[in-house]
View 1 (tube, one colour):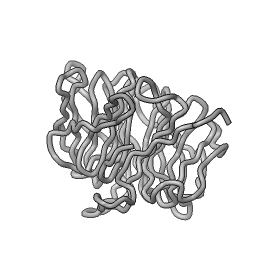
View 2: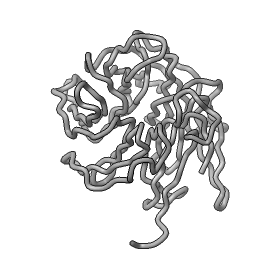
View 3: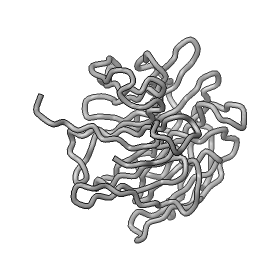
Length: 280
């Protein structure tokens, strides 16, 4: 659908706007009739990873240890650095609390220029300014593990990781009444290395990074559907169900990162749409 170097992650706003992160920029997907276009939102070049939306603000993690953000009601909309993480090897997956005053960011799975420091950190966002981060704390220590994607449903946080000898897992951890982390539990043991995932009305859609697959799990963690290996490029990084007005709810959107650090070949570096052509 679109060429996006090192396409990594995506998120829909409540109104159906689609934002995608990649190895150079964060873009918004625009549609003119049947054609799609990418509008760059980031004020500079960075290796962008996780995305979150809260309080009409788009947040984006960058691999260099910065958090970028921008107001979604500004025209033209832009995002710029607003915070420097402390002690993070690779800020990656990102999600927000229900009230939008907390962000949860994954540190992992591995970084190219520092030792792993696997954890989920919590950022407190100022009540009167969604572009101001007041403090950073470690919310869940994940020593010995390799976490990646994170999403929230109600007061539950779900995250993917791997831990020897398990190649991949989907985990769930409750956000307790005092805001601390409850006991993390393994919801599903996966057959391949996962990247990020999304929450569906009836379960989860999970990407398998190296095998070019997307699978579907129910809320009990059981696989109920999936694509064959190599349906997508290696580096399959995120999957989301389409939303109006840009897409139908039967559309499936997949970011294909491709070869890590390589941003110009047809192996990955794209946003793909899977569209039903009949009712079968």
